[in-house]
Image (cartoon, rainbow, N blue to C red; front, side, top):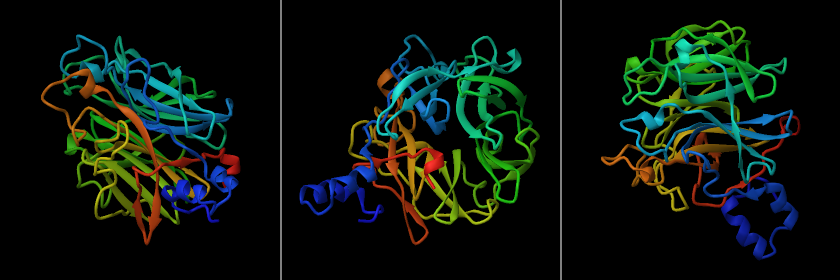
Length: 350
């Protein structure tokens, strides 16, 4: 039985005796739905999932919005946010809270109470972990304040030391995603809020020195945020949060991108905390399979956009996961089918 068998058919085939139990075990365990809710602030968003080689389990880093804190006016609840950590010891099917990332920032970048958003974490060949993080210098009630992408390093994924503030397209940049370039070096994509929330990119030979390159070709003229780039099925893919689902782009050189017709997660699902479009993606490629992690605002009817009344139910957010499928160069995912997940350690995923 092939591993690309539709996961939605597995329960029926298992009951009918058409496939052996060990085939289902190989496919994985059904992921919880919602996959994760933060027990402190109930505001988990912007997930990125990485293998922790010291702990021998999977870690999820996420923005922890202060959704359940009373007495916060304006958008103060989306500021003063730590970076939460959740961990999974069962291949990504269930997650438990594992505290917060210990991040050191200069006062001019973090203020008295730093705002930390949208981490991206990569491990370089020498084993050093690198985080690219959006910072805002304090807590504010509106969106009109500087935002900087900073570079942090760690040897254990828990304690993060400040390395540099990046000079990019403007003084208001967010949502970094970094990937290795096959020919050598690294490329970062991010949201330049000063330019109509366009997707820009920058290049680096060493993860330390970055040169901004302007708008991403084929992507930059369409407003969006939270770009995430990954390689799968012989192509590079970029997912972008369009606030009505995820835009999908494909490339063969990491420079020129072609948009896919239709958006992922634009149609609300039917499962718990999933009856709204999905936002801010993160993808893990494990062997020949790819899993899309995203977040939802369950209390918002059919859309992730803010509502007129700002309550805890409208603020809170949950993390979800769906397995991606690819056919004829088109990405899709059935968020209403059971997601059988089996994230493999990187050394055994090939």
